[in-house]
Image (cartoon, rainbow, N blue to C red; front, top):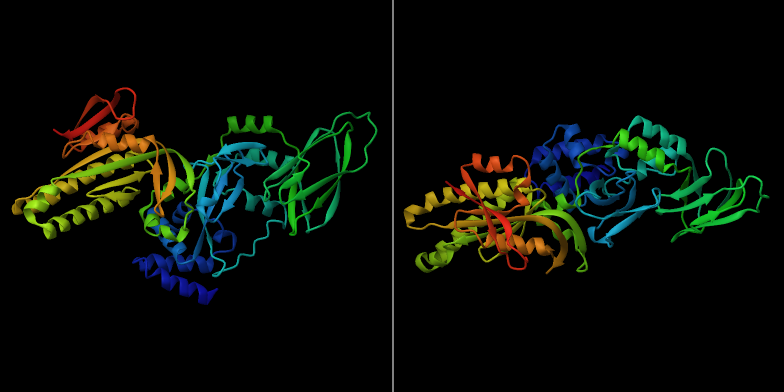
Length: 477
C-alpha cells in the first residue's frame, strides 16, 4: 500500500492546497482497518477525526479524482436500511424506484434521501480483505448501512428472525429442512443479488412432499414463491451462478417490526446524499471523471434553484470598452461562485452575464442571495469612482426537478427551473424575489429582515403557470 498511497497523496496535493488536511488523511488511511476504509461517510469521518465537515467532503471528492477513493452510490431501503444496490457511477441508477428483497417492497430512487454517497479506498491503494460471507455478522455489516441505528428491541428481533447464513460455491447445492412451528412463513433472501423466495407451510396433517428445488441464478431466485400443504418441507437450493454466494434464512415478521419502529424510531446519522453531492461545487468542477450517460434521468424531490441577472453590463461595454467591462463581469462571476460554494451550492451554468445555481435547501439559497447583494454593493463602492455601477437581480424557487445531461454537463429540467427563471425576471436591480415555497421555512423571513430587507407579499402571473402565484419581493428599506 505504501508506494501507491504516497503517489496518490502527492497527486492529491496538485488539486488541493490544504496540505495539513492531506497529511491527516494519509495518517487516517495508514491506521484504519479494512472496515473503516469501506463506504466512508464523510460527515462521520469529520466528526470522529475532529475535521471540518465541508472541507473533509471536498478533500474526499478531490481524492476520488486521483483514484485514492471510489465513489459508492448506495440505494438505501428506507425500511430496513439495507443497501439494495451499490454502484460506482451515478448513471447506473437507471430506474425511478428500486426493490428491497428483504422487505419485499419498492422504494423511490430519489436523490434527496434514498441514494447515499460514500467513499471506499481504491483497490490500487489497498485491496480490502472483507468477506461478507464469513458469518452472519459480516453479512449484515456489509449489506446494511452504518447510518441507520435501530433500537435495542429491533436489534434483538433481527437476531431472532434471521436464523442462519447459508453459503454456496458456484454450482453447489445444499439441502434445507424447514418446519412450521411458531412461524409458518420462511424467506430465503440473498441481499447481494437483491432477491428472495417465500415458503409458506400450512397443513400439519398433510403427507410430506418430496424435496423441492430452488435455484439461485443471475436473475434471482427461481421460483419466487412456494406454497406447500405440509408443516415441513425439504428444499434443495442450488447456486447456478459462477461465484460463491450466500443467503439468509428469515422468518419475516413485519407487524412486530413496524410496531417496534413506531414506538422506537430508527435514528439516522447525517450522510451525504446524491442531491447534496450534485450541489457541491468541488464535485461540479471535477465532474468529467464520471463521464455520465446522455440518457441520465434522475428525480429530485426538492431542489432550490437560483437565477441571477446583471443590470448595466451592456451599457458598460458601450461606455467603458470591452476590456474594462469584461474584467468586471468576470469579477462578478468569481464573487458569485465563491458565495455559492460557501453556502453549499453549485453553479450549474452561466448564460451571458447570468448564472443558474442550485442548493439542497431554501435557507442556503436565500443566505447566498443576501450575501450576493452585499458583495455586489461592495463592488459598486469600488467602481463608482470610475463612473460605473452594476445591479444584481436574483430569483429563487424550490420544488422537484429532473437531473439530466446536456452537452456533457449535469443540468436540471422541469417546471421548477422554469418558474425560478420567471421569478427572477420580476426583479429589478438590487432585489431578490422568491416563490412562496422558498420562504416557508421557519425563521427564514426574520433572517431576511434582520439583514436589512423588507419583504413584500405579491401575486404574479408566471408564464407556464395557469393562475397568479404568491411571490415575495425582498428589497432594502
